[in-house]
Length: 112
Image (cartoon, rainbow, N blue to C red; front, side, top):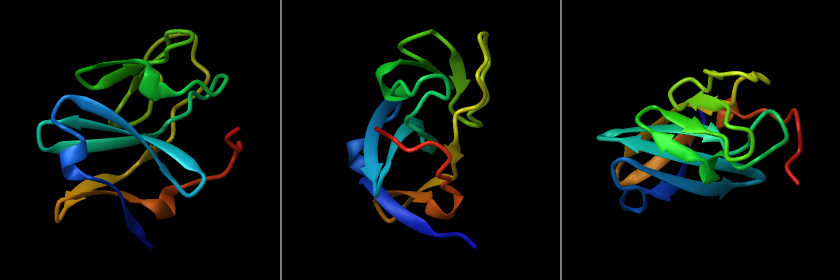
C-alpha cells in the first residue's frame, strides 16, 4: 500500500538541482531533472556519508568520501568499490509539493 507524504515544496528544488530533506528519522536526497523528481536515502551504504554532499551529474550522484557513483533513478552502484545500492524512494510532484512513497522506507541501519 502506498503512503505518499510531502517532503518539500516543488519550488525548493529547481531543475538540475539537489536538495537534502528530513522526514521523521530519515534523511532523503531529492534530485530534479526537468519535470521529473527522484529520491534516495541520503546515506551512502559504505559508511553513511551524505550523498547530497556529492557531485550530481545528469542521472548520477558521486559519494563525497570514496567516489562511488550511484544512479539517482534506481540507487544502483555504478562504479567500484561497490558496497551495494543506495535506497531509492518513489517520488513525484503533486499540487506544488514533492512527495515520496513513505511505505518504501526501511530501517536497516539507524542514522547517527
